[in-house]
Image (cartoon, rainbow, N blue to C red; front, side):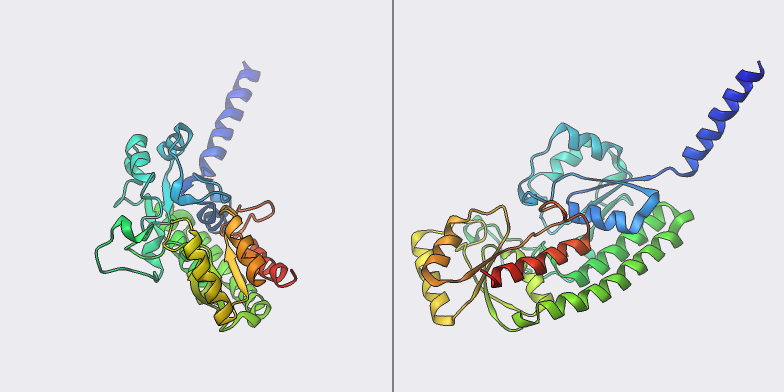
Length: 303
């Protein structure tokens, strides 16, 4: 009997311990948001991303495993600006989790806390390509926006878990302070790009250009999401030569044939930039993402 009482007491203490350290279950649509949630939430959150950083988050496919994650989530973080419009709405409907539906405290659209570039007031049609009328959704690629995002995540976690609100706010402030220091180094390393014209494959890097002062003057895609043609590449060749454009930037998941052709014809350097946390091995945090971007630019210059 004494042994049984000891076992029951141990189980009770274990239950109290687990309850006292219960995690807020956060699900994010991208690894970038997952990295920020982990940086802010620390030991009081459990974070899972619905998509890997090595893929294009525009075109995810809803899977049963994703539905299960959303069903269990206390907080859903999304990029917004229609980034996930093709797959998230049916996923939310299938998950049937009222906590994380739009308009509820467990749903946080981070596009609402940053200044979006490229908003369109005119009607949008598919003839324009893969455009986002609400604004360009790749805003995490300006490090300053990362601070806004971390602050918003901390505030929402504080609402959901008021007992640890000061903890989340403190980690958010620490994140911002570290980013300030890191940003000085990144800007110094990329100072040679200031004012220079650059070609991009897709429209993903406008926020990166805003942060580091280079000018994206054209894209390999004739329209967003439209594959380049022989005619569009020919026009781009003339532009590169006429304007003496020295760098082409692109994500790892796009085809390389067009970039290689432009390189062979003009000598333009190709910088394959990781666009997200998790884009390749060793990029596990928001800070490591920009470290890797700086390295990719330097490697392109050394070609």
